[in-house]
Image (cartoon, helix red, strand yellow):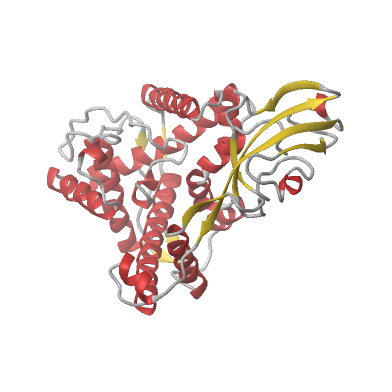
Length: 392
């Protein structure tokens, strides 16, 4: 659910939030947090507007992705492997003639792009020219030190390798016909204009969401918290951990490795502390948002929720509203809409400035966008985490 879901913490993504059953006149779904928080000023808040710009390079990147997405794979049998080919190999690794743990594919084969495996030393280079069915002893030396397995540091190894298959990618030529056959546009230029318009709309939406997040963060900083709904925070943490363990199992890697590669946490205890801090920050924002809504009589109706869900179904080409409700409850969706409405309220009196101390600190820390990118790229990172000991 892309950017509109960004109000949910990147750490708590995919977790059904515990929302309680508030009885305030403003909602039947969002909880009453008045015993925990006293609002401060939320008018005339300063924020740094995000620039909205789409470059020719941005458009070309999307155009290249379009062409790459239409590429086809062709099995190669009449030549040796070349850098850039997708290959499948089997190997058995030995040191001083003895097989070592994690050094074999177990006869199941492994796929990678030749030249991009990340395997140690010059492993890939020695596969160039091998044809399907060829075998070869690939000789390499482990780095010293070798952090994944210090016992292997500096050791010479031999990988008895079999080339199972070679596949090359055939990328079509970008033409008006290719565009017309695969998009709603008739020409390359028309498609580039559409790409630019779509990117601009996305950039404007992201700028609006960044402004809302900045203003709501400022309102949180001005609020006073006397206590926290500990049961809700505990539930968020427990549900997040359960979700992370399920994802780790789906990737067939152990939980400790998962949290190390996804979040850089060296232990489960350290990860729980990290989650506790993230959950507290999320709850602070949620409490302030709900109390502003109550004070300003901001209401999210069932019709608002239906319209919002319908827009998500259309925007992301989902099969039905059920695809949304598989991950989010009415209360979750209400909060997302509520944040948008509160953002509009805060912007009415907000003051645009060139910079603020808070925004400068955020930029130095990397900002929220880098967290989003890390989440979107996490699947690639997980694949790296699951590779064997031949990798660097």
